[in-house]
Length: 281
Image (cartoon, rainbow, N blue to C red; front, top):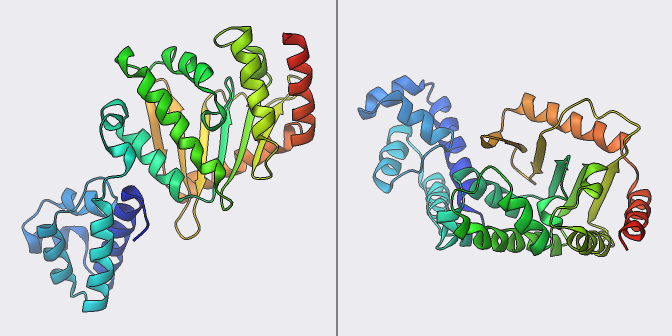
């Protein structure tokens, strides 16, 4: 099964919840039958923890899953335990669980909507620019891991080569002004942005200073999937936070649509970047 571990774990949890609902059992009912704490049922169904083979067998037996359904769930269980590159050495030790989940979701999505107020989005960053942004951020606990995090950011950019993936990114004008790494680095970064945004599946838009973005200064990443519900990631000073509540995700989707409406078009953004490059020479 060609699916990332995070999404497989999520689908498995949703399938167990559906089976439980079909038996008209509450989480407390299922936990009591199995001699578990109710929180264990919740963690499995919400993909907050993995499922062992022993627990898997107990759940499918309790819910009376037939052989075809059992085989389908077994494939999800196997996929949930696969070792994607971001879960392997040396990457796993340098990445937070939330970041690993984000990468997994990114590989399964068909569209990513990314709002970064002050910096060029990660999927568009060159290594020298990424190194400065990562090193000055609040999340690096060990400076020896910076090179690993830069490499991770480069490997993530492979998704831009997929014909079935689209990136829509919005930044404020500040992202073109702040010289992270110095003038030469910013110039190389903006030249790279112009090159990448020539592709039809990559769009960057800039919000000019004469319009209001609503005063929201945090970054938001929305990921949309062919079959699964969309998720949102918020980056704050305390780390990344996943949001998958449908109502909350819809709010962020409407917010992103608003940002795209007030931002310059893709063509006008490219013209503005070209003008900024002339200033940097």
